[in-house]
Image (cartoon, rainbow over all chains, first blue to last red; front, side, top):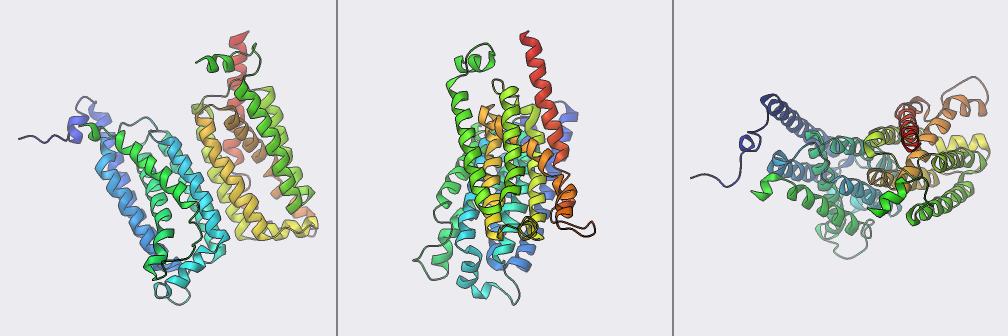
Length: 215
Length: 204
């Protein structure tokens, strides 16, 4: 009995061995990079920004790695399959960060989850701007280049951006109920639906462009 | 298809999309310039609006009708944008707004700097990547504005700002990362001009 889903060997059987080897090497590097990124960012978030951000970083990484492992290796390379959604998510995320900054989202998190922060730990409003709209956006912009070039790393970048968009958007709606304060406006609630929709469309595009989807 | 033909043919009148793009850019220059003037004063406006107007003129005189292919400029644009965001990070962390305000004798607070330079500007520049990818005239203008801005505005961190404060030559926020965005920006400008010249030769 044969499986209906093609293996990566089936998909690239017609490719020349050098190209197949290159692709597998790139996949291995990307996987190890993704795992290194997950551990580093989750721990860094826990140490400097507190448990809520660590949970968000971990969930984002797990969704990105899971999606990429499930669909990314069946992806047609050499083409940016979701470039518009990628950039659209970055723009929507900037709008989300803007609203969160205006309405003191980092302080809200600390107020809602006091036990999630050790003494001296927590993201100030100043640090929030340095981390999210500037550093994270800069790295994600470089990821857009990798995605535009149709590389394996670019595929993972797209999964990471869409996963982060989804997690960051859902988080603003979840933190109130999780903290036992289901009512009340949290900074980011206006922009979050836009981020969520664009990210979801991006994930849909990635999944549908995967050859495994059609098998 | 007809739209592409219209855009590609330099002998025809400007298409509706192109004319609308010119009008939007003109409105954007006035709006962003006014907003910046009210917050940061004449010197910052001079640098940013200088780049916007120089980019506008270069755009009108070269690639307005034929935006270059994304393969030609998108990689250099994305690298320049990432390097610029790192540059703004250095400015932000080391208090650029306060220092430039003090040197230029204006009031420009950190929150105002965040609004205009960290949040609003990058939203436009990141969104511009879609325009470049789609070969839309607006995206092409954003590329011109950004590249020209990097070439005209960034050297001021080394050549102008330290002297404005007086005393011995010293560090000014953003100085160490100011020149790097110029590298991909110079390549981007060169590629756009090369593409335009090649297209003009093909027409004649």
